[in-house]
Length: 72
Image (cartoon, rainbow, N blue to C red; front, side, top):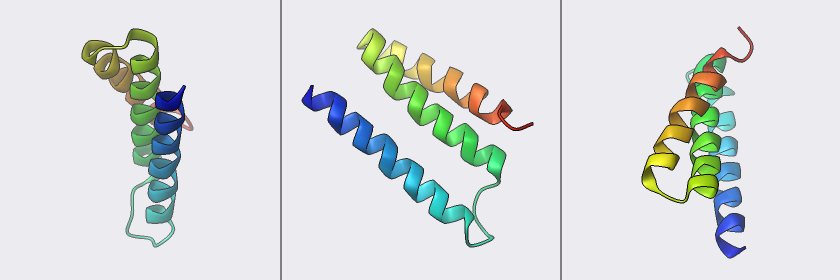
């Protein structure tokens, strides 16, 4: 349970920091932000489901692709 809370906090902190970057005009585009957030969320979910490095990397890759396609 403790690891799940830590991973959730890590995802939230990355989301907040990426959101702050885009507000200054020199940050990431919305597609890049969505891809990064999708990769982080996918990595966390992949790790929670599979519990190993392969599942984490697969989840991050899939999440990044899905995130980049959102809003197109």
